[in-house]
Image 1: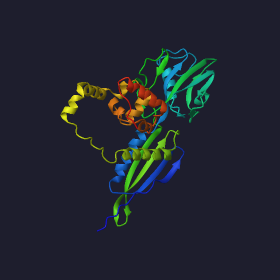
Image 2 (image 1 turned 90 degrees about the vertical axis):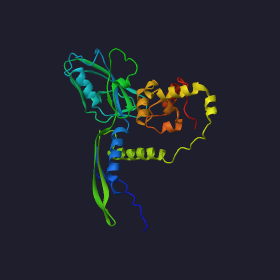
Image 3 (image 1 turned 30 degrees about the vertical axis):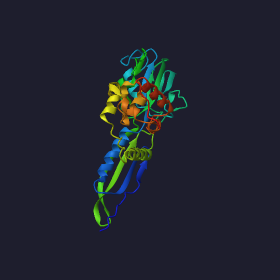
Image 4 (image 1 turned 135 degrees about the vertical axis):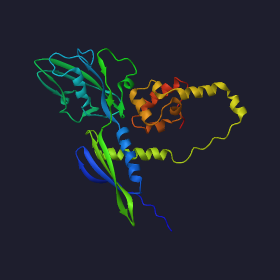
Amino acid sequence: MEYHITLPSKPRIVSEEDVQGVYEIDSLYPGYGHTLGNSLRRIILSSLPGAAVTQVKIEGVPHEFATIDGVRETVMEILLNLKRVHFVLHGDEPQTISLIVKGPGEITAKNFNLPTQVEIKNPEQHICDLSGKTGFELEATIERGLGYVAREALTKEKVDIGTIALDATFTPIRRVNYEVENMRVGDRTDFNRLRILIETNGTIAPREALEKSIETMVHQLRAIIGFQESAPAASFAALASEGKKGADDSTEATKIKVSDLELSARITSALEEAGIKSAAGLARKTATALKEIDGIGEKAITEISKALAGHGLTLKGE
């Protein structure tokens, strides 16, 4: 009896409206609907880069629990409103945006002074209300990253007095769900149809989110095809001749975490999302392999190389 392999269809658009899209993939082998659906959902939620506010400085405000004369909102409410602004950051370097206004009136995201690398997708987002002729000055740092990062991880060094560090939700995804139903393929009725609903914050199209998640999955699976070639077994005498120091160094490198290398928060987050947790694991990667990780470019490679050199390690040669 000849066995025929049935391949799934490419994604089909069921509906697309602004920031929400529904897509279907047909002819999945029985059980693959949930396998693929759950995997894509996790990748969409965790591995798509976005931009968010990480630090804020408000003129005359020492901390986030303060209030400002002539401003209806508390500082905490202003910070929450800032987190609702949807930023697009063109490039990997952090950028600073500013706000210098006088009341009375409503202040929205459109009042920000933006560098060319920063774009706001919801300029109507409310920031605060000013009464009288009150002046209001604010500076915010926008960074690129993955998923959710606590402010403790973003600010490894002490921040200046008056600078407020924030937790950052970088993901551009608001919601993603999937469902699986059976369908007929040939004589069989137990093949799967996968339907995925994706809702974004407007900084990325839902179709692009699905495409990038599929590319990420394929890239990760392609990297693990095959097996590593085993190195020739070394004799006990040869291993002993290398001395105890080499073994100790290797052990120490394994103990050093990526988070201990004092890299920028963006780079640390990108490496950890890619599954690189230790300095030893990082040293086993080539520069080319690292550049394939979202958020890692030439400047990041230079920073990583310097950090590894401080521990007597280098990136793997090409």
